[in-house]
Amino acid sequence: MNWTRVLLIGLTALALTFVDVASLSLDPVASAELEQFIRKGDVVISTRHIRPRRKLHISIEALFMIDFPMLKHKMSFFLDRKQQRVTLDISANGATESRNFEIPNINETSTIRSLALQFSKNRITLHVDCKASTHHDIDMNLAKLYTQMDDPVIKLFRERKYPLHFDGDMEHSLQRANCQKGNHRRGNRRMLRNKITEREKNKKRDVRGWYEPTIAREGVVDHRHQEVPTDVERGDIPVLNGDCEDALARSLSDLLALVKLLREDVAHQRQEIAYLRMLLENCAGCKNPLTTDNQLRIEPDCRSANPCYPGVECLDSAAGPRCGHCPLGFIGDGKSCKPGVTCAHHMCYPGVQCHDTVNGAQCDSCPAGYEGDGRTCSLRNPCLDTPCPSGNILVPSHNVQHYQRQSQYTARKYSVVTN
Image (spheres, rainbow, N blue to C red):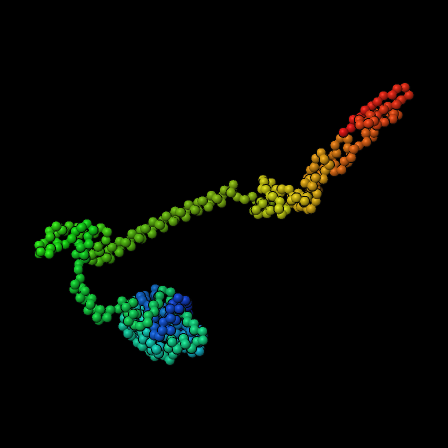
């Protein structure tokens, strides 16, 4: 039972470690910048303001990793607050070697202001809070690893919270971290001795024209600008005297009050949106018609489902899409068209009305006195209509058709005028 508990604890710690390592992400910009410094020679990789983790049970943090993918060589740097050290894991050809850089005076809740690793030939030196801590010598430096690759490629993975900075020497890295050397400190002391108070600066540059009393060249004091106002605070630049914790606390309380108001406003808007949604869902006029099986029925239209023949005009109506006439030379109802004869071909007899139908052009009857199908008409023989009494002979005359009735007693002429 005890062995099982120990195994579970070990697996849990290992999983937490891998989760922390997995937080590293590839930084292409930093990789290219590191490659430029490696080409020149030495390089210093630094980061600042490493704050403790909220989850104190994770004592090992992954800082960054330098990967040479062509050589399968990796350098991984971890911060171990519990053991007070930075661990370097060098992986080469499947084997892993570890080096520890001791960091005194840190714990799991302390903040590291600056951390720099100086790569100088085969030596790596750790600087913590502007002080050199520990150094180790390694077999292969960064420049040699870079030159051994046929197609040099360097990948730098880092923690997203900690941006990395690169410098060519340690002096520039210390200046970046605002580390003061001895001569700088002496110069700062002289500056503090000769420092002008903030009140005197404001009097010299006051926008209202107040100046300090000046002494003329002849040694006479100029009293024109000797008057000094009682209120020396400027209106455009706030002057913070003493500790600013009270002002910061007031600002935070105002910010919290504003966030509370915004939260209440968002809650009211959420209620209004829910009310509008309920109205839309219960609106009978907004609902789509349902079919017999309680499914939504989608009314077709010319845009979604055009039933017309290609090239035929489609019009939306209350009964659904309506199609126009078939194209020239085609017959049909507009939905299905096929080649055929239409009225545009003038197939009817002159004077006969033509109608386009689904089956093609249809001609009306021939004019009076003509016979035919409407397309071809010929003059009708008037004798077929028997205009004269039976037993008479019809004799056509010149121009106007005259038909003579002959009988035993009299003879009369009957005229039939044709078109």
